[in-house]
Image (cartoon, rainbow over all chains, first blue to last red; front, top):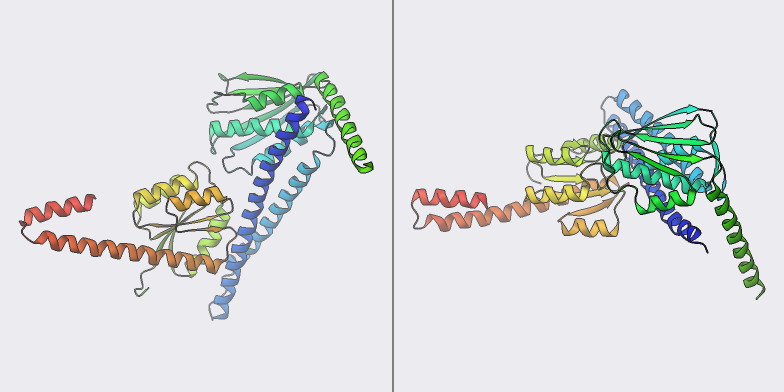
Length: 243
Length: 162
């Protein structure tokens, strides 16, 4: 197994676990809100049965809150499903805006997440051949680093620029001080190397960006390695079946 | 609980909607509640108020729940703290217990169980406070023998600092 595939397997599993844990926390929070709001509605009904006048505005607000939380739950499950399916095809033409949005959404489940605002410039469709799961991991790791640097009240502006023909830039900038001490972490460096993307940092401007080329040779090499890997895996499975 | 004094409760959770719903329900159970949406607010509220029991979440932006628990227990000797979290792990539960949390409850939690746990925590607080007051009375009685009034006052001031 190549070093890159080894890393992808190990790190992928860690990333998958971490994201799933944060989703389960989010769902628990949603259920806790629904549970307490339903409980409060029942308390209001009990009071009415005991002769008190029904507090209609409070009752209505409970129902609205329940509907909102159910919607939030559906949305979370939708993101969870998208994330789960992002491992289906290891290398494919990937919509960068969609990948970016998903990574932001997944990272928003972390308690220390900052506010993120996203803008997009250039062509409408920004698809590149890449490993969507690893790219999500990269964006997620960058966001975590920035969240920790600027704190939960901080703001991150993310701009997706695909004006040039040879690739797309994802620019992360902060209106407040962004300390890049210890950045990029070893994990981020490794992901960048595997994906064949470029990282640029400008601490003076409180920003950093990743440049994703449309045709990365490293991705083509990785795709071949992955094909070999899945072929070997298939052969191993078949020979163990026959033995 | 013999007296009509309401239990003074500090509720800490960063999920505003959850906090609002549970606070409304607890008010109906005759608790006097102050709510805080993060660790800093909770520490500040505890400093400015007299609380019997605090119910805190673990994962919050800024100061996390474990640190809040540590600070609350350090600064408020008789405050009993319950942890109510959807994020508790065995490690965090062990850490919270070591820091003196009365109970760790998992979110979503049965409301009646929560109310019961708050009342139990309040009784523990009363018991500890009573034992402390008894010890204090004994110390004061001992001091009263053979001390000048000024000496007694000095010793009392020292006891308060302890």
